[in-house]
Length: 351
Length: 231
Image 1 (cartoon, chains in turn green, blue):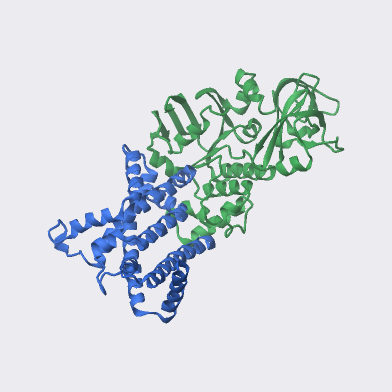
Image 2: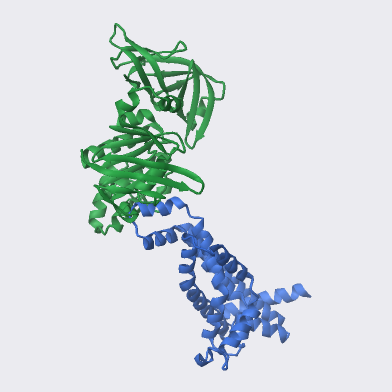
């Protein structure tokens, strides 16, 4: 596969702080690569450098083997920021901005904007004020605004952080479609390892500005590592032992008397991923088709705009998210006893 | 006594407005002309200066900002005197014959209001989210377009700075008195007329002119605010 973007010996400093240290990495054409790592690991800095928004203190960026100036990088890439940024104007004008910069005609802009809005499920939103939309809708607008200009390389900085589950699903579908249909090379920073596993074909793990792992998702996530162990505590990632049950499901013992059912027919030592947004929170056990029900206690609650992230002790620590409205209506608080319910299909195994 | 004078001033102001007194109309229109011209002149050079100061980092930027902020409080008479010397026949710009003309007054006032537009606009631009600049850049905008985009996003603050500049020009006395000389039918404006009428003991008439001045300043401010709200 052709190397599309190469990061060569890139180091970057912010004053005394070294954000990236002699980084070498190559991203393949038409692939989705996930950059994972904790806060401050250098993911966003790397995206900004590839996107031409920062000039690296040392090193260079090559596109198809040719070193490129930040001005050129800005023309062929587009970065979708983690913090949703929208111009204080209509949705239409927001999407039309990049097209106007590129000199498209009015009718062409109209058609492209219409198609891009359809793609993110916001058709008919043209005249709405972009800043009056919900956080989830604004992030979908950001994605549409980036895709409407059909960049060679799409850079995404935590594209689904702090979003409601519906918007997360739309954003993930659109990223996947852009990659498959338009052949866009996607480089995506993510905290969410389950998302990285689901969307990306390659994963680059950064820690303290250093590349600690790079390879296919199964290569990176399949092997136990100190990095995964450290980072996994934040993301419902557990190591366990799986065996097949009579019903054809895998039963995974992740320790501390916690056993999870999964549809992946895998046996032996596995890594287990559960997306926080796949877990339903209830105050009473609910009767449903879901195979996993765990009782736990809320030990931490962090407010992220419309979403509240909960850390729940259910033998093992689980992370889940609820909307702020649900959090308030259910009168949840630290110490509240709750039930976590999720389907066997939501338990992803990597052997 | 004072209340009676004030009341008489109000009545006289109403009468002058309703009847469209030609003398009052003349000085009012001249005031508006000089203030608009000075604000337009100052805006043409202040906005680019403010955009550079708001968007770029360069050595001495902090000092430059402090100088403009310091000049916000410059005594108008001192500035008027400076321009008087500059524009007088023997001065370096005497050849242009701008002393005792409305254009000379507008030039003097434009210098007075420049620090207002530069300082307030710079603050408005700096207050715009850095993310918006990066957003424009990542969508492929060249630096000039990024600057224009940021200006559009800060339009509320920029409008306020221009309105503040106009109000300052419209209500100041020192510069127009020193450069214009308060010549009847030529350079007399509302503020110089108020000063003259007060000196002549025509307190009620002075109050009437002051009320007209205040009404115009308030009307413009209300109008601009209404326009900003309707956006």
